Image (cartoon, rainbow, N blue to C red; front, side, top):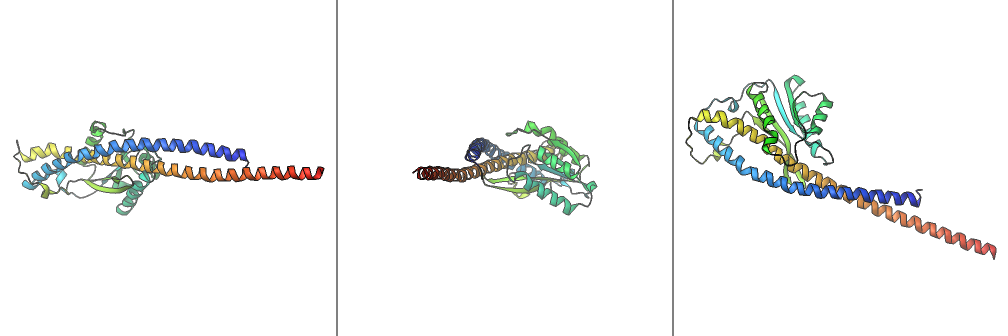
Length: 284
């Protein structure tokens, strides 16, 4: 049976742990509010970009490589994870989903490659022996487009150069503070553009195809950035929830240890009184 000193030590150490997890919960909550605002503020830009691209795609019979499906020899998977753990199932959910998808679609490592954002994902795919052609580590908690512009440009260029015949985005979509959904989105070719949303008639100068040549890569890069903002909001929400759960568990442990301590202390006092009474009786 643990001594009173051992129980007291466990109570104090658990209290210190709960203080740390509570502080981390509050930090994540503050980061989540800002990340959620960033993601929401980016939505109008993406909607307008999609409207313009949809308008061009609807009005012309473009054979731009980014709009045309071609025979798939190699697939690229852009996977967004975090650089740190302590975020509940945030990383494991998306990594499990991507792994299952790869096993279903491909028979060998020659048929695909991974483009990974985040140290956790990089380490995971390295352990599996999956081919990683690009990795980005140390992305800020509140990323700007400049932070990933070069990466996004290189990724889109890989498709243009024929290294990949299709590209998929896998990340956690932010639904609410307690809910995030693993999402796979086809990045390239851009065959899923909703031309029905194009309600405005535009006049393009110099030509539709020349505009597409500039606009489509920017649109694809924006999809990557939008997914990153969405994933960051999910990461902070998941970490906030995980730290809240850890804090609640610590409080429960403290409560049980305190009860155990009080009972042990009461038993010790009772034992001392019994010994004193017994000794007095013996002397009498």
